Length: 194
Ligand code: MN
Image 1 (cartoon, protein in one colour):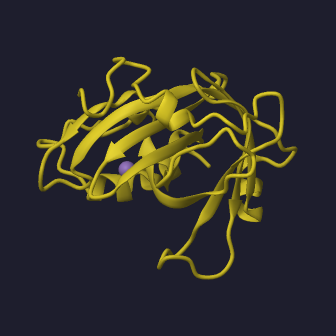
Image 2 (cartoon, helix red, strand yellow; image 1 turned 30 degrees about the vertical axis):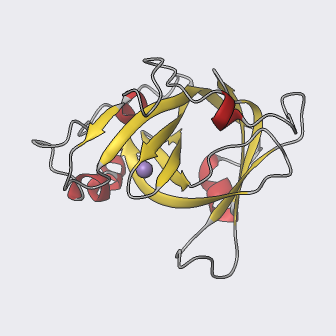
């Protein structure tokens, strides 16, 4: 996919937001393709608290809202609802989306880093097949994570996926990482402190 498609990919994101009011980035940078891929997990106190998991793909951040957030326990299957593509600049966004704006509430960067695709499939192929496997190199999240598209209806969502920790050296069945490490990796603040 080229640049035109990338601009089209952000149309949904832009249509939902008023950039003279919200502090969120409008987007527009197109990182060189030889840079390493970035991921971010943002904690977002919108109407319902959730975590937004975003993976860089072709100039945008592919995004899922994960109500319970990521786990280090391979037995946990975390519901992940796809949301609109976000601009790359969003990976460092933390702040307060004003009342009345789309997604109003506080956002912190709970974790960020780089990732690699673990599958021989390209990212679009993996997306199509409904199984994405990545190796995360974050400050909190490490190792393999799989995103698997679910089948059948679930909680009224048109499309839903599951986010699952893969069983590797970084798997931890006891840790409750969203609880034990709640602070932003950018500001060191928790959502409450922001
Ligand atoms: Mn969100």
